[in-house]
Amino acid sequence: MKTQLTKMRAWKKLHEHYKHVKNVQMRDLFDADNERAEKYTLQLDNLLFDYSKNRFTDRTLKHLFRLARDCKVEENIKAMFRGDKINFTENRSVLHIALRNRDNTPIYSDGKNVMPDINAVLNKMKKFAEAVRLGKFKGHTGKKLTNIVNIGIGGSDLGPVMATEALKKYWQKGMQCYFISNIDGTACAEVLNRIDPEETLFIVSSKTFTTIETLTNARTCRKWLVDALGEPAVAKHFIAISTNRKEVEKFGINPDNMFEFWDFVGGRYSMWSAIGMSIAIVAGPDNFEKMLEGAFAMDKHFYRTDLEHNIPVIMALLGIWYNNFFGVKRYAVIPYDQYLQYFPAYLQQLDMESNGKFVDKDGQFVNYSTGPVLFGGAGTNVQHSFFQLIHQGTDFVPCDFIIPAISHNEIGDHHEILIANVLAQGEALMRGKTEKEAAAELTKAGKSKEEVKALKRYKSFSGNRPSNTFVLKKVDPYTLGMLVAMYEHKVFVQGIIWNINSYDQMGVELGKQLALNILPELSGNATGIRHDCSTSRLIATIKKLRK
Ligand code: F6P
View: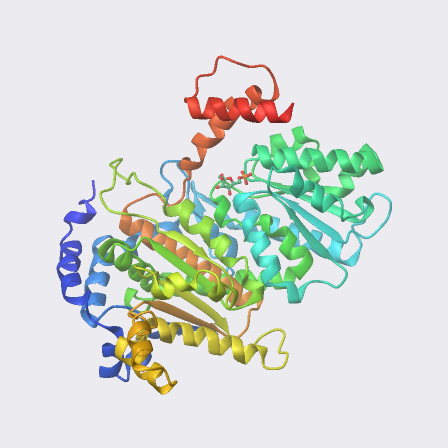
């Protein structure tokens, strides 16, 4: 049994140290040290990570790295890359890193090198994607398949949604990509209304092939296709991505049209597997491989670099610093690039499904907080929605800003304005504006003494609000791969320190179980199931409204 986190020496030291740092102003740290940005910036290929606008001193970092070492972060990283069964509640290795292991060194799970199977599926996937793109794999009536519809949910949806959008500039001309995830019939109807069955390829993506949303949507789409083109068309218009061959066959998809992945790939870590088929088709298999290469570059950095220069490790430690010592349990990710608009939603599952846990690896309830609430959206849009709270809310929200230096759409001065805005946010959050500064500005603007007095506090900003800035050259497949892998590893390191299993998701089961109880009550006359009076009343009201 591991020493309880809060009893560790490094943890206690951090608590002590926090008392000295909590009131330190970042603007003073910057004023006192012109080298701060240089000291606290790291670069990997085309990705720059500036973490200087955070509330720490050298001593803070020293304590945080000590904590990481005492929590055996280095050993745990090795264990993951070695294929140890670190997902112990499900008795599984955690090997999404093997999917992008571009130098093909053997990686073992259960004594078996996983690389030959991974390479075989990747090759099959590349060939299939190319055949669809070239129109060699045609629809039942001989037409080219230009509508690609991914049916999946959670990890079988969010990665492909995010990455296809991020790489939109790389899409093959004439191709369209759609996603059906929600069980809400509207999700299906809205896509099916827009496409022609003769030109449509459905990709049923489900690790388990038992997820009610995905199977219900897939059945609806299958019926729609069969109604239009007849049963034999299914073989030419449906493929499956899954670990569950038996269920794929049962569903009526030819196993030749199945692309396999494995239990050692978690759903929210699966966009690197055949789950990324929609990405490979619309953006092309070469670009899909470049994305794998970018992730591989980040994996190597993560595996080989000492903690003090390790980007995901530093991100994780700063997160722990705010979450567990400042008591700030929220975190925003703001990409300043329209193509990355779905990145926060993707990260939400990655982070919150991985680290939203209250039982530690020793089976004990934790007595410290774990995963933060992650939210975000594309800048500058979010500046006009939730940024008021980020600047003047009662608590600070650590932010990650992501900005490409070059836009895919350099139109007029749009991109300069975008860059100016992201940099201004980081600066404003860090420096803030004192009442004195606000008063001086108001006076300069010609306000009367009374007006200055009345307004200066409203116009002031406390500042000292932390942010990380990530500068990319451009949102390309390689950089996207790096970015995603970077966040995956950040989440992993936090899970190690919190001593939780970041790779199961048992918390989503109870709701699913209860929904199965309620379903027969809604659709039929099943009675006798005991609910609380609120749930029973809601069921009765909805049934009445549906009559
Ligand atoms: O919501 C829980 C979950 O198991 C996620 O972890 C997963 O990504 C999603 O459901 C979809 O599961 P599947 O790919 O098995 O359909």
